[in-house]
Image 1 (tube, helix red, strand yellow):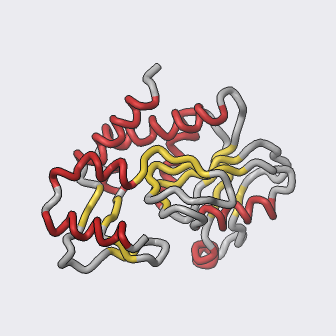
Image 2 (cartoon, helix red, strand yellow; image 1 turned 135 degrees about the horizontal axis):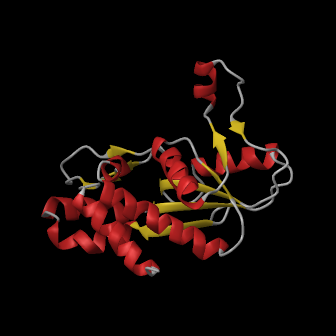
Length: 209
């Protein structure tokens, strides 16, 4: 069995090979993140998904993080409002033979005009739930909203935890959050390759946090 640190390094290698971590220069307009915050840095896991090897490395380390947490315990998977999150859940569920709660955003249920249910799963389930997402800024994000819905709709489920590949900066959260890689760890791997303008943008962002 491959150890976690090796799997983590494979994940980082995949991020770098697919150019998934984008850093803008101080002169450029920053990205607008899903949280609404502005940042000179953006991690695009869609690029990772374009490479079978990089995507496999990503899913392998997420599975390792789940196994490290739950060991031999059974658990349920659930996605958040993100295409990559849904891909992650499908991949892990297939590989590890795990049941899923399927989450759909309110906007999507309105468009589909079907059952209008945001969560699909067995309401009698009483197993822990692992919410998977590719990135989080740190602190409570969109995953918390889904976790809250699960708590309301599945009365027997009392253990909900969040698992992400990349976290910008670990902060206290309502639901226990596990991560593979931090922003600063990834920056350490590429710092010498950044231009002076990129370094200034990163330093400015760190100074304002």
